[in-house]
Length: 198
Image (cartoon, rainbow, N blue to C red; front, side, top):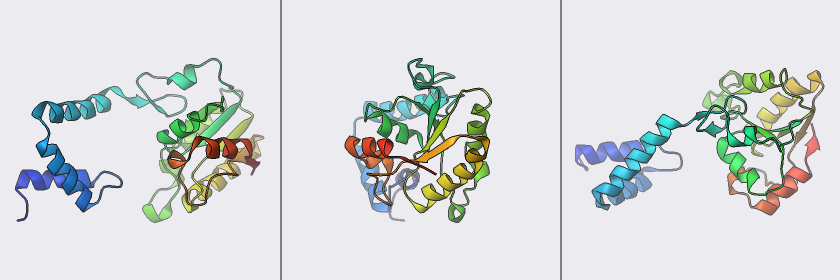
């Protein structure tokens, strides 16, 4: 056995985090063992506190401390436009450009049959329900320009266009295979401004 059991368990849990491989998990585990107890306790407490207090917004499915998130509560937002994103972190990326004033909807994933992720597992039903209660005119599909993002965008366009909604897709500026949360503000602004109808 290379590691003491508690250390091996810590490394195994850290490896479950996205983007953390075996070497990174080991580095993080050793770092956490070196920090003072109060810092380790603060990290553990922050994780538990976030898990306990955060939920999904009843309208847009963004992460929120209340039933409705701050963006959905903002009366200055354009209620006729909704930007559909894959993950909550994509909202943060778009909000950084400080120019988009519509609403959002978070799918919590993208269609990926290879990973056993199908439309039924995403928050698409919640998106469709919004059209019965909100004066929506346009849906901007802002999924990552990847195979999964494009598949999800096409699926949404096939669902939404027949009900008379204008469906657009972010265009210029986003590199193929890129991810929204890594894009700079100018690139995202260009992608939003030059979106195209699907």
